[in-house]
Length: 429
Image (cartoon, rainbow, N blue to C red):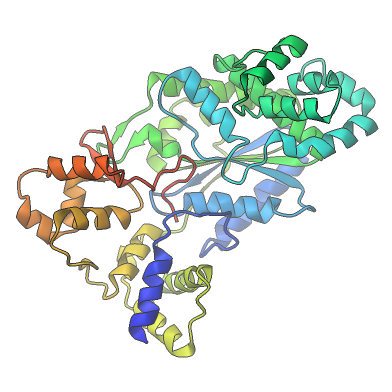
């Protein structure tokens, strides 16, 4: 029986990121109460209230942000519309990055495409004709919709402003009827204008405040090299956000905007004072360390996620496991997961397979964030004995070719399993 419950727990702990917006959160009652005061303030404030959620890598920033969206925005009676942006910064050329960020407002991570607001738009248009006419003077989404002849054209326009990939004949129609460009975001100003138009459209037709949640800010700082990694493209993206936040307030939109970041990453953004001042008054730090009760509650919740309801005897086994955890070593949820998967809390590897590729893949699969070769060696004495001087380049290249891992061109290089970063999840839990 002990083997069964521990084995089930290891399976439950294999999920490193939230699949859906979680319905539970552990040990953050004080921070939730503070966040709730921000939500209440946002309902009476003029403009958007800015806030920051601080936590080290693996300490649950993504879980916190997505729990918040579930709590405030999950049912029809909710007074807020939640938009989760999985990557506040995206690499590559500026225009591609801006388009990718904008598209993530409406596609993926449980966000709604603009097309899903069609019925509410029809009702708003019918009941607020003067307001619609006023909004159409500056809001491109509404201006286009007013020129549509039927529902199909409206759906196409809403897909267009959701940045959905359209067929050539659809783009040709939009160009002929509306003068639409193939790509309506070609610089920072285009991004800010399109974003504020769509956010205004959502708030107007729903009558709800906005809850805008930004994740993966950590990309502006390398914990491996302890250096700032905010590139020139990143600075331009940050400038676009600054303009966007100003325009949200200028348009009179209401709601709460939260950024999840490590303390180090937030300090990089805070150095840009014109950006930092929008958030400085509302900052919380996720709980450290996790108590033994937190760890027990976490284990039970994870088992429930895979539909395992432990018996009384199994509960005692879990209690024994969590009581044996050293709170000096449970700084983050990543630490808790690692210790509980270890089972005996002595740091030994779960798998003793002597094949280096298998060992490497297992270590990366159990990590919540990319690891350097030195990080990997710390987790395996077997690898340390086989490769005392340098990393096995041939094995890493083979695993990459097989699509099992990603090799990040950082200094030093870091490695991760290919499924960890799907583009919209932080490696948090």
